[in-house]
Amino acid sequence: MPTDTSQRSTLNAQRSPKVIFGPISSRRFGKSLGVDLSPGKKQCNFDCLYCELDPVKTMGAYDEVVPVTEITAALKQALKEHGDIDFITLTANGEPTLYPYLSELVDEINTFKGRTKTLILSNASTINDPKVQEALLKLDEVKLSLDCATQVCLKKLDRAHSGIDVEEIKAGMLAFKKKYKGPLVIEILIVKTLNDSEEEIAKLNAFLLKLQPARIDIGTIDRPPAFNVKPVSYEKLLQISHLFDPSLPVYIASRKKADISASSYSVEEILETLSKRPLTEEDIEALFDEESQKRFKDLLKEEKIKLVESNGVKFYKKA
Image 1 (cartoon, rainbow, N blue to C red):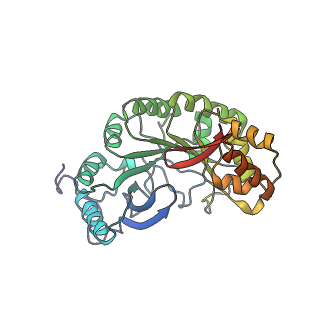
Image 2 (image 1 turned 60 degrees about the vertical axis):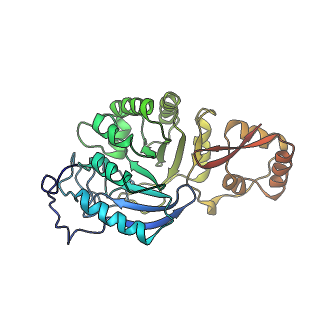
């Protein structure tokens, strides 16, 4: 591992912002401690239109680096204070895989994390880099973003740093997936008029059929974005989910129920819906009226519907 001298930071350790945040509770990852690898400012090779952080010039490398020793010391202290953590989540005010000592950091965390799992939330921009792959292979779970399957979309929506190519991202994902033993989750954030067309979804679908991730989370904007871009409705997300091949484990991660009116579904319509796209309990509560939910429960008892689990998320599908 590099010495403190070799990783001399432009941040003074006693003045640097807090690298640990949380714990945060989520249905998907339980109780998680966040580790911010860029706590002082946004350091990212994307400047996504939907980002809640203020826009800044993209960069290909960090110019402010917190030492590994400082991060691990803070994390050890936090784990002492919170003994029931399910996940240690590596993230950043920007892109965590740009952190220059990521592999060494993961090695160090693995020496003391015990049964606590490690996770990274990355925009996947560097996944074609063998050194990044080496670091991510040591993590228990990896979640990569893929908002776009085309270069035009990547430049317009994610506003990628010069030299980042979507085909290289896709090639890197495929190479990484062949080597990685843990769950690989893909996240797609849908933005109105930018990546919600049938053509863009078709290209994402074609690639994801090759990749075969453990789960695909599709969502939309739920925090105030830096730019004037709009979310899509839950109904639109549901329509988009139907555009993906039924074999893909698509999970609708965003649910804004205020504008959803529950509908009446016949037995045949319930079965037809579940044959096209498995639904979670939250989906069923949002979509089905009271009588339809009773029909759903009857079908479950009759074993015409079955419950399956995909990397921690439970889905109902046609048996």
